[in-house]
Length: 300
Length: 272
Image (cartoon, rainbow over all chains, first blue to last red; front, top):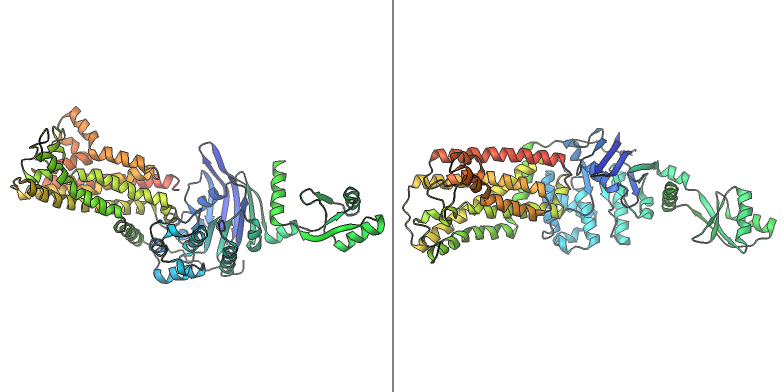
């Protein structure tokens, strides 16, 4: 069963179409990285899934049921933008209120569990307004985890987290995924997303540009050899002829040759043409590079 | 995916949902200084009103009986002087301001966003907010009554009254809290984070200006009892059991109307 299934979803704000015929599928148990530029429609889609805003058209199904179904709603944990807390209340009291709204039976136990999970045990007595941005994000995650939901919808949850916070977040999400929780997570920190996501959806102008699994992304992101020589132009032309593709990376000033061994390239250039390689390394196209290339292609 | 959860889609009953939501709203009410400030304000209004009446000038001698601080002598929708206007109905003006700030904070803090992503239904929200707001206004009526009695005693006005009529007047006004609370809740879910507009609108409607204006046009007719202000006014010192029934009917009908309309709006509009 799919945790989220969206078909031809549209959302129009006055004249602006924020989500435009979007379709997406999030399998149960996946960590789905939802990627897109600012204003591409990510947050709007997430708000639509959570029922905070009404769709102008299309269909949203969660676990095979309409997303407005009350039973389904009790299985969703949400962090959209910032957690909705009363600033003058303590973290504990804010969580008590949410636990009451969720109708949880063992409120205190559950609050202690989720605060421990996000390593915020000591912050329970702090007033929410006195918490740092990173603490607020973690409290937001704790809010979303109350009641052990089957689906987590997280909008930019790692914004404002320090390196340790990101590591903790990564561990939490991977742990949840192992226990079968589905996670829909949007983020601009693609390097971090790449470490945890099992599926990806790339959105642009409210439309789904591409959906793929981590394996498919891997296949689309080949390894390459990046090198520098004393005659870059000549070397690029030679490598282009020999290996079919050799790109000049303007940012690093390196030539990139794909799906080859570094040793073979260096030997070929020096042995056949006397071109010495001054620097050489093997790397892999990252999600970030893949995403940027995709966006640039889209603009063209 | 291999590790999928076995899902149980539990649907809590209306009473379970409402219990949770009311618990939250009452907790918030009792933990906001706003509530206590307005309770004190309600107690102070009669003192301020009676002090004005004791002084010299236009307002001097506007009360001849201490209970007139609580309710007018007769159901007069057309107001001739402050004495006919200044009574427990003023609680509903301040109640509107309190409710607007209370509900406005739901939106400003993002609490509604957190709430409406759970199994909470929109009608639960309307009902819970209406009941809590009504409760707060009943409390304000209570402190106004105490303040009014103290003010009446302080001014040395006589307390002679038909006890039955007085009780009917007080009950009538207290019952009207529900109707007023539903109106204010309705206004607030329309304007949401813009609670400055809600405060202004609640204030205008709470003063009864539209009904007073209508009375100036159509005369002092009982037909105006269909409005919240109309019924609040007819709960006066000459009230009887029928007046209480009118208040009850008016309050319940408007509460139902505003709750249904509010729920429809919440269902069809973006919440956050």
